[in-house]
Length: 269
Image (cartoon, rainbow, N blue to C red; front, side):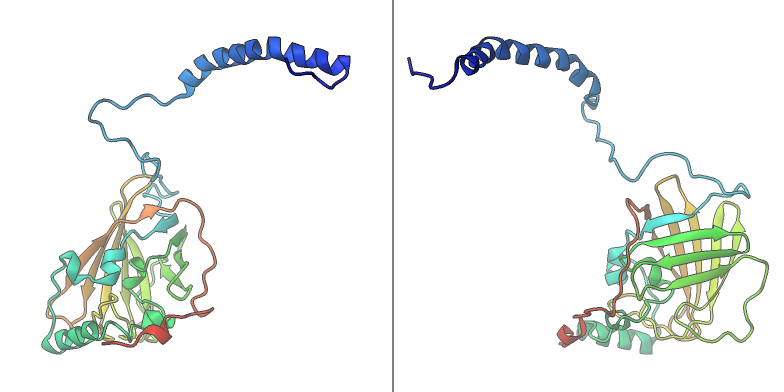
């Protein structure tokens, strides 16, 4: 038996530990076992798909007017539409000149995309750009702040005013909001025609008129139907739909102009 070069007191502690510690550990593990069993999640029924922890479940909240409250931070969940709308199955009714421009932009690997140069994506592309946005509904005015896409904001007036009869053309246009039942409808005109509607190069003109229909499906999900009406570019109006999800976490500061390394690599074909 090895000799213990320690004091009688220390030897006594070693002997006590050797005799009693295993019993204490067994007692603790046995006492915790029922608690662990109680806290463990119930096993899913055979063949059932586990419920994701996010987005949260529950009914859509209501605002002071009794309408669905669309306020909150949202993840666009629409990267495929942002990159290539046509590839998602959307039928885009091009005018001949617009289809030619679109094909040229695609063939040139989208090197002239304004968003790559930190310019605003515009409407409706703000809904598909892959950065969160926050909606804030106030009496007479709804605001949308975008984390990315040049870190811009939109003012949507709900105080009963009409569109400015001679709006100053801009990237985000002149927006008026109203309710159609439980759907918040945003009508936007006065756009500058400089926006690409997706990264692939869907063109637009200053005749662009966009209608967005925001519907909060439940606590964690929203549907936005977009109608694109640009008689300068397309032969008839066309639509696409996005499905934002409630953001898990908070928006952060993102400044595209800081350390933008995109442009030097956009060489085209």
